[in-house]
Amino acid sequence: MTIRETAATGILSEHHLRLMAKRGELPGIYSGTRFKVNYPLLVEKLNRDSMEVNAANA
Image (cartoon, rainbow, N blue to C red):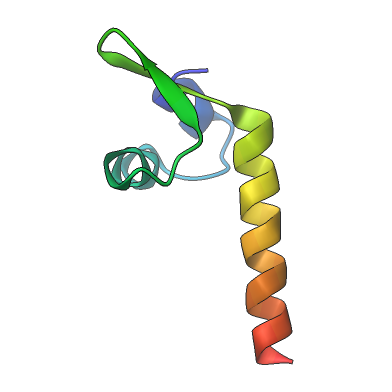
């Protein structure tokens, strides 16, 4: 999925996804000039990060 397609799912904004890609935090690869997001890995990463934050706050 492209960044725009991923943003259309409502998981994160297009702006935030682009910032993550620029910082190397978005799972995926460049195909030419387009970044292809590995959506299943992104969901897994967000779930894992969410669990870590919840554990730290407990």
